[in-house]
Image 1 (cartoon, rainbow, N blue to C red):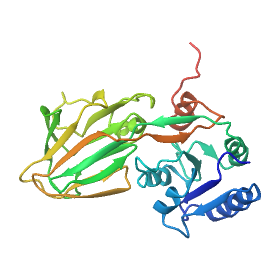
Image 2 (image 1 turned 120 degrees about the horizontal axis):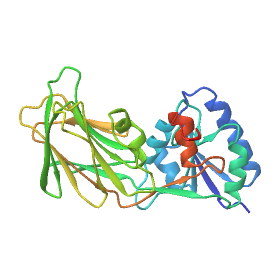
Image 3 (image 1 turned 135 degrees about the vertical axis):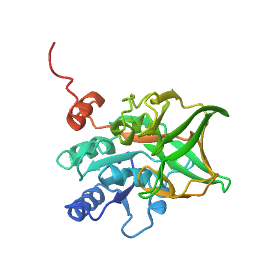
Image 4 (image 1 turned 180 degrees about the horizontal axis):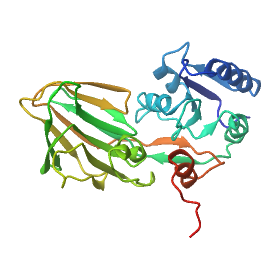
Length: 278
């Protein structure tokens, strides 16, 4: 009997080879007595609620989009299969998919638990979950922003910048890294506050434990200010809006590839030169 009886497919149909891989996966899984739930036919949220394991077939964006549908009550492990470019979160390649999946169905696999963050837009109270980052930034034609950043109610900084990124340890290798932020091991329960193009040279990224509550306040005169969640979802922020960011009440469970470690991923995906001998 397979370790997982219900497997969901969360895919980006626009990716090259996605539909062919979907068909091959469905056939392979059904031959092994696994019930398949497919988000091309069923809404993705329902697929996740019906599944013991979810396969994200696409790129990192597909996996991040899948995370948007998780909740404290529904967070099955996710196996990321890379059909895209960078593929930092989607560790498994198409060539190794079926060998890895055989091990997973037998229960011979390891999970990497990642801490997402929860963003609440105030005063409306709308909530989002992010695995990588929460970004408050200006539109294309907007002026430089003044953003009031507080930690546990105490003012930390008033950034004059193009915006602010609050990234998880998982997201430290994404948008935050391109803005000069540090690489933080994904096993750490930490968040990074990183201003985007700050007007003051002394403004630098801040790393703190995930137990703190961060609040970003938008000024009275701010226009065309947007909130972006993992590059997948978001909304326009009105003047005087506030975004409260804190640890989410659940973990994201990523199935690890047995073929490579985190340090090998850094080397392969980010070209970090960790193999040169001293």
